[in-house]
Image: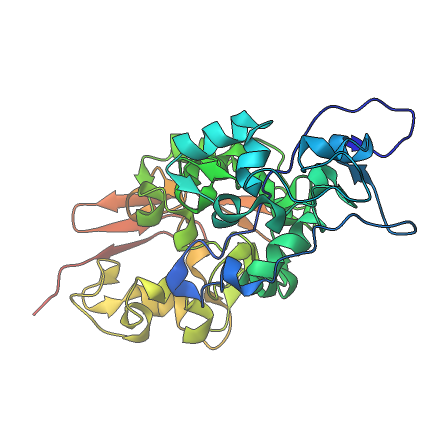
Length: 358
């Protein structure tokens, strides 16, 4: 393929399949996309004068139609000389090899290269019939809704190579055509310093956090980032699948903790008294209830717990970013044989014991 220019030499290239953005990484979270059958096949006719022609296929540009068709004559080329994918592979053997070697292949790539590419000319690189994400959305309407309706967007979906930042358009060794295993793919970006969100807020180097924190959150220990995060876009802070307070203080509402209560019992902060729900209690007095369940200024989960990994048991933080500037407030937690102690953090030193006095 080459950019259209009458004086520029071009290399032989045939159509190859492009990426359809796959659906949400966790199928139970939402309705799956309809799939490739949902989209009608695009026209393979050459774009005419006045249309947005950015790239041309070398055989078409050289007017040597016989490379693919029965005759050389551009006005009467006849039929193609073999099935379309077989014809493409006659020049692009590397794509055929990829499709054969990888266990997960893209259905449009298996079915018909021209579902994504115009074999003559096109407005987009790689002879794509549409802009990449628009092309993907033709078959993946649920993903389109996730992306376009997101209050919080994921920059790899919209920047650079877009869908292809994470997915291979033809075939892959990983399910959902991911370029790497999910965790390895995530830390490609989130395992370096100075990654920032759309507001310019610096994000943690997650790879470093996990290396320094031997106590890991269950989903993180399983390398399942998508247990909590939506890869394409979300209505929630930090691309979370469900609600979770972004603030240090928040009035308690169980709906604001939907993400946490997807795994943890809501009774953990609902019941004022317990001897079974938690070890964070003083006798039978539930200290989760004391801290979180307040009409005003309840401490949210992040006030005491890390979300990915910690050096302390129970995912307790060493420090917590406090105030608008994120000043690191020491928690000073110390585990004890039957409880624990917090010293000079939000309050004076206090010790709790799980022993129940009868």
